[in-house]
Structures are given as structure tokens and as C-alpha cells.
Length: 436
Image 1 (cartoon, rainbow, N blue to C red):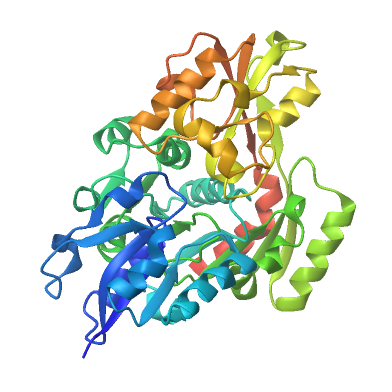
Image 2 (image 1 turned 90 degrees about the vertical axis):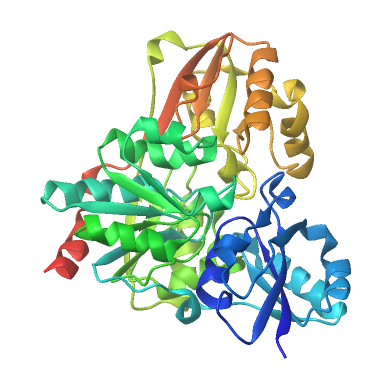
């Protein structure tokens, strides 16, 4: 008799694990998913069209808070944790809830969830959300392109719409962002590739996505999300560490998994890094991985028209996931504010709707506004929050160009960071070796 299973996830790893491990598994019957981190996604379901012949009905989604009653309601034997960027304490808190309600708690490893490619695969992952994966991935993609190679980047999934319409998504131009109704979170990742004429694929079914990529690519680049490990078995595993959050590399799941598996570890010395934190990170790496090549890299921070912003009052906007479940209190815009002596207004005072709730859920946030846009409603609430703010200008430190799709009543100055090629020369050397 099949064992009833609940998958607890956050719209990404959970769907991949279902499709690769549970879909045709005669041992298990997935009765429900719970959803966390992303507002509103628990109102959907996993469609039977994607679930396969063993599932005659859509698989329901529920908020994770209902897990104890769901275990009893569905007579559940196993609960599988299938999402990322959780502290080890949070993981065991969830395990304790599961065990106290009579079920078994489980995790799936790489051998059960890796897809294997016919093409060389480079993965870029991290120990926490917001370490700089996508900037490194972009540089690697441009390096490969300069060698005359066709590279397709596979992005960790962000399917927040109807899943049966997001099975395979292929982004080549800005029109594709509109075609697939890309959210702010998706735009933050996809735009940098599109600007550089590099293809990026994403969606729900990564076996199909990988097959599509293999038809076009000489090399597959895995651009990871949060601190999750790759869905595709890599030939070169590059992992980023953020010394501003020193110690997190050993205390977050599955970030430590990534660090233990890494071939190359990049210590990303962003603004705010201290020598004390660098020492902690270096020592922690050596505790769990003695084989990896450790490389320290720097990034540069820029802002549009800096001559226009000095001494102005400003609302600061930062990357949503990095500031929320990534745990950062500040971002690129804060460094610009300090450098140009801006008078920073308190964004929380002007927040409305779900944006206001973000500050209650993540009390570590101070003044900065997270660029949250998981739905059209939330994008409208972000826009209203910006328009209500009493300030001269807005410094946009999110990776996406908010000016393109927000109608606001004050001038927005984009700020960003990047990593120069000279910082990654050693990395390019490792890449060149696997391509020989």
C-alpha cells in the first residue's frame, strides 16, 4: 500500500522533487503540498495534467501553518521538506512539528533529484540568498559567449502563476517577459541575460526544460536560486559565500550542503565586509571542504547620474528576497545613500497592503523598501507605497529596472553592483579545463 506524503515547499524545489522522485513512484502518494515564503501561492494547486497517470485529481496546496491538521486529515506517513534558505534551527523546528504529529520527516539528496545532461554543466549556487550568484553567472555566460560557445542559462524556478502554463518558459527578448507575465522577482533574474543576448530557460518541468536547452546549447549554466543546490548534475560546482553574514555558511540549509560539494568557493567581498568576518568565513570553509579552490572576489557599486542625487531626501529600494528571507538589513541602495549623504526616509511609514505586512513578518528590516512583486496586486501596492513616500528621489537597488513597469511620481535612480572579469580570471581557468 502506498504511503501518504505531504511535500512542504515554496514554489520551486518542491515541484522539481515531485516530478523527478514522486511522480511515477509506486511507494508514495502525494496528498498535498504546503507553500511558504511567497504570499498567496497556497491558493493554487498542482495540476493533474502535470502530476501524471497516478493522479486523477489536482493535488491541493495549503498554507504551511496547517501542517499538523493535514497530517491527521490525510493519514500522512511522511513529510518531505523541499525548499531552501532555512536556518538549521528552522529545519528542526519543522521536523519537530512533523514528528510530534506522528509522521516521519525526510529530505531528498542530490542522487534522488539530479538530472543528468549530455552537455557540460556549470552550476553557480550559494550559502544564502543574495550572495551575488546571478552577477557571477552573467559574467560566466559572457565569457562562454566570447569563446564562440552557445550558452543557455537554466534559472532556479519561480513559477508563481498557473503551473500548467509554465511548464517550459524560454526567454530570449523583453517581449518574452510580457508573454510569460514575469513578476518583479523573475525580471530581476532574467533581464540581465536578455540585455546581453543570452538565452535563459525556466518553468516547472526541468527534465523538459533541460531537453530544450540541450538542443540549443554547447554549455548549460545553472543559475541557482536562494541557497538551493542545482537540479542538474554539474561538471563544475561554483559556490558563493557572503562574509557580511559570516557563520551562516554553516547554519543554513541547504547552504552548507553546497559548500561541502563545491569545487570552487567564491568569497564575495561586497561593501560592508570586515576582516573579522572574512576570518570566520575562511575558517568555516576549511572545516567542511578542504578540496575546493577558494577565491576572494570584489564587486563595484554604481548609481545613475550621481551628480544629481547628492544631499537629496530619498526612498531606498532593495532586492526583495535578499532583504526578506535572505535576512539582510540593507542593500546596494544603502551604500549609495551613505556615499552621497542622502537623507533616507522610513519606507515602512508609507507601506500599504502586503508590503506593510512584510515589515511585520521581517522585523529586521529598517527603512529600506523590499521590491516585492509576486503578483499584480502586490506590484500595485509597491507602486502605491513609493508614491506615498515624502521624498525627493528614489534609489532603486533591486536587480530589476523598476522604471519600466511602475508609474511613480518621483524620479528613480537605478543603483547596482557588478563583478569585473579580472575578479573571475581563475574561475574562467577552471571552466576552460572542463570544456577541453
